[in-house]
Image 1: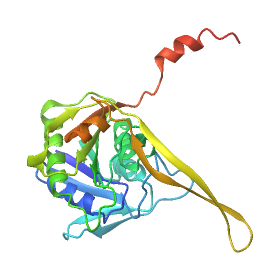
Image 2 (image 1 turned 90 degrees about the vertical axis):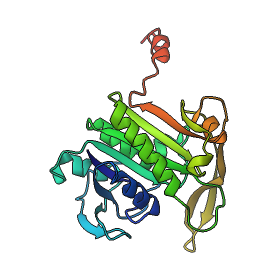
Image 3 (image 1 turned 120 degrees about the horizontal axis):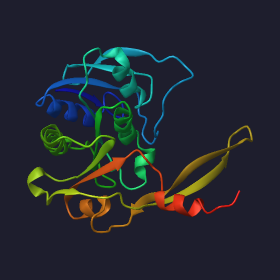
Image 4 (image 1 turned 60 degrees about the vertical axis):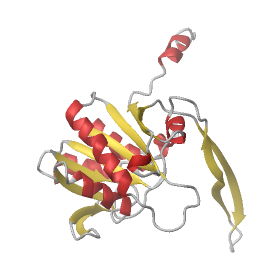
Length: 254
């Protein structure tokens, strides 16, 4: 089993190191991740400029590849032939914050795993539901063990084609978990605000800010599972077609 480990927080992020450490217990690991933070970058593929790749060392002294491209680029480049050995699985994370509901369209963590699935390779994204306002370094050790458990299950059971697993992990020790739950995508509630300002040269500029997003905590959703102490495993599909809407739109007269 050859596992590609990536993320959207940058190659030196502690969540990536913890994930790579546990994945090495399952097979050969290649780490290929961006050289900087691409959080909330969405599904970006760089087409209009050259991409640079170089080797670097992680904090544990192991070798990794990094690029000035986006998270999706860091999956596409190795799958397109930079890594000549066949890659069986792509795991992305561990993101320091949960990716729930509509977050999946913004998340570089999730869309990196989507890039793998588009290329015909299994993809799993891992995110940690760290406490809001947490001070000091986060502990990714339990989340990484949970990620290994999920990936091992993927290896044993297999996974349907064209499915991305979006896994969100409570900030709990493994023995404190309520369990693992297969969930549906919940509803994220964003509370964004536009902050308009004027720079010293009299030109307008803008920040997108506002309060932290919330969610609708319904049973069976990713939000509900985390609230109840479960690891949330949501199978996502790349086909975004609303088939019910198709029936309504076919009645339009052009």
